[in-house]
Each structure stands twice: as C-alpha cells, then as structure tokens.
Length: 271
Image (cartoon, rainbow, N blue to C red):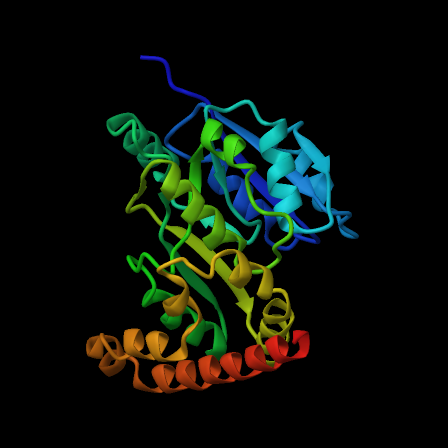
C-alpha cells in the first residue's frame, strides 16, 4: 500500500539554537514519506543555512507566523500537512499515528498532537506543569495536523490574527468534519524561561486577541479559553499534580495570575 505524502511545515525566525533538534526529529520519524518545508522570516542568524542542510524547500515569508504557515502549505505537495514550531521536537511515531488516524476515519479533518514542555530553570518547570493540565482538554488544545484539502478550502490560519489563531482554525476545521487526537507527543522547548520575558510576550499577544474574540464570540469554548475561573478550576481539579509538585504548583499559579494581569492590561490598552 502506497504511503501518502505528508508535508511538515516549520516556520522559523532566528531559530538556529534549536532548529537542528526539530529537523532531526522530523528526519527520524518512523513514517518515511515526508516532505519538509521551512518558511523563514528574515532570520539574522544562520537559520536558513541549517534548514538547507535538511531540505531544498526553504522559503522566506513574513510578517507573522500565520502568513508563514499558510505560505508553507501553499508550497507543499502532501495530502496531509503537519505544522509545528521550530522549538519543538516530535516523538518518533507522531506522523505514523497521524496517518493511521486519518486512514481509519475518513471524516477526520484535523488532529490534535498533545504537547509536553521542557526547559531550564524554575519557571520552565512551572510552564511544564501548567501545560500538563491542558492535555486532553478540548477547549485548550488545538490541531496541528490537517487534511491539506480542508486546510486550503478554509483558507488556513486567519492572517488577521496574531493571537488565538490556533483555536480559530481548529474550530473551523472541526465544523468542516471531525477533530480527533493521537497519543504520540510533541516536546516543546521553553528554553531558559524568564518570568519577565513570559509576561512581555503575554502582554503583546493580549493586545492582538481582540480579533479572535470578535470573530469567535459565539463559540462555546471562548468563555473557558478566556476565563481565569475556568483555568483555575482546571488546575485544582487534579490534586495529585499539586501534591506531587507543591512548590512548582504555587509558582505556576503565581506565573499564571501575573500573565492574566498583564493580559488584562494589554486588552484594556486596545479599548
């Protein structure tokens, strides 16, 4: 039986420090019929040179990741597309599990690939703990694998959005067919995470979140996605996680509360 081509799209920007790990993980998949497409956004380091060691499909496109992702899919030839970030590492069976899911249920139009964070320092451990609560939570996770024809027909990521675009696309993909999930993990490198950098990032994206809220105001998930109460209920719903890492849990709550605080300031600035 012929293996369908899978295109893995990787947007990059100054990604030289971690790109090889990402691309090696794609190269080492148990599934072999893979096309790698890298879309760079005017990197100032040697990101493009590293990418060119792995594929001839290296392009330049900006200004934001949604433009990069959509352009990458346009340049690809695969029947299915998987879109990951350059600071991610795929476990070796991700693509195999995706193809098996799509093959076993023709109604599936998108797949969630669960993520696990890792990194250096206390705040990276807090972020890892936070993201562990989101695995299997439909209103928090977003699809990363798609039928190419569905992605194209829906226009891909909404380029008017810089924040919330993952949720927006997943919700549209689900309406076009069916969302499912695999068990193989993506590992997300948080690096040496600094609290101040995290808060600055949250503040920036909060200022861009209004477009998602406006477009998706009638979505059933939006109150959970944007509500601090829903998030805290989720955190306290798993006491085993708290007991296993009490200090990290307190740090995570502090970090998340601070993120919601600066996020609120970012939203208020746009009003």
